[in-house]
Image 1 (cartoon, helix red, strand yellow):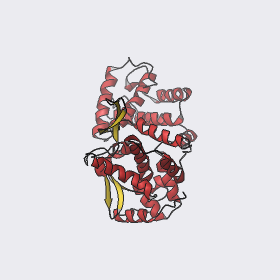
Image 2 (cartoon, one colour; image 1 turned 45 degrees about the vertical axis):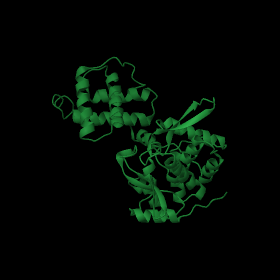
Image 3 (tube, one colour; image 1 turned 90 degrees about the vertical axis):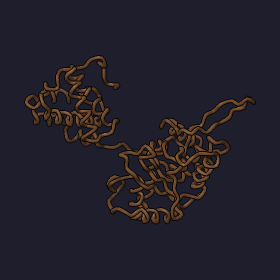
Image 4 (cartoon, helix red, strand yellow; image 1 turned 30 degrees about the vertical axis):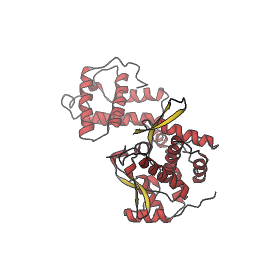
Length: 341
């Protein structure tokens, strides 16, 4: 908690209340652990402000002063908005708990608010850079592939170009998640095998990029199976370097997957900078695909929405309805990418 200047201080009564709220977020609200911890950190910031007095001391005056203190800290408006949203959710829950019902005025919680202009500013998104598909193709084709590490890295970026997965999904994808059906390859994103946002299962159909990009992935999968990897093994395993008896550096494929997203980012950075492009994070490939889809048919755009895992087309662009998986495969596979090489 980088903004906690009093990590050694606490209130026993507040800690008990937060413990119960933590259980509520997990069991009733069904929030994941990362979200729960973020909420508790935001509540802790409020505790620091009230100098660890009991939560029952909250009132309209405290709310106003807290908002002003946040604005004076030169924090981003998006952070402040997140902070007061989490605090309001907590106080509304707390107001219903035994020992607090007559002490916290429910109406005072609404004083935790930014102005309309501040809210709009907080929601405003920065322009997100993204590569063009041709830049991605040029980068992949520029990558060497003489060693296992080089082939793995080339397959890694190729799969991201084809499927635009979230980084956690890309890092944890297994060999068995790469499936070919009706002549169309796709990644079966399953929370049973991969780290998946909201634990949502979906099929991610390969975008029909040139065949050499597809073969980078298929060939790597086949190589892993040839050397003894199982269906449940990671598609992108960790590779260790060590010196052999002949004092030559050797690389060994390990049965474990890449552990850190930082490693994934380093692979992308090295490849794109070597090709003469600035580094943009792997997640930007999703923006590349959405922008490409915007220029295609509405059906293709909607199929891409399903690829990206968006419940609503509003998240991608506009709403067109849900496609069946066979229709999704047919539309995406039939929309051939134009290779300008």
